[in-house]
Length: 71
Image (cartoon, rainbow, N blue to C red; front, side):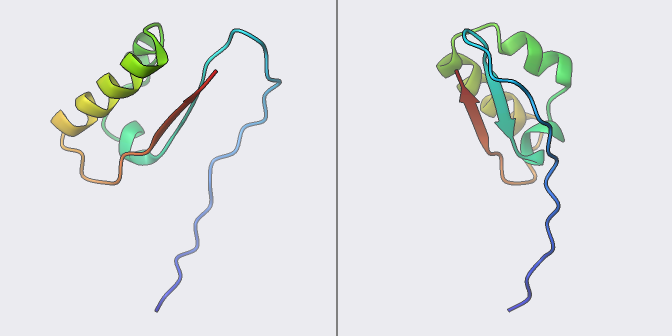
């Protein structure tokens, strides 16, 4: 079995009450524009997650689509 070297994108942020944080794989970012994701984050977290997943799948969803929205 061959192991792939994976280099995650890391960004340090101070956690603030009342903010939402989107953690996702390139399965989302390759298919959905950043502006679309920002607009969808205005919805409830549950709605945003499901809508992002649907949009990514409709756009082709060629990779694993992993999404976490933390509040």
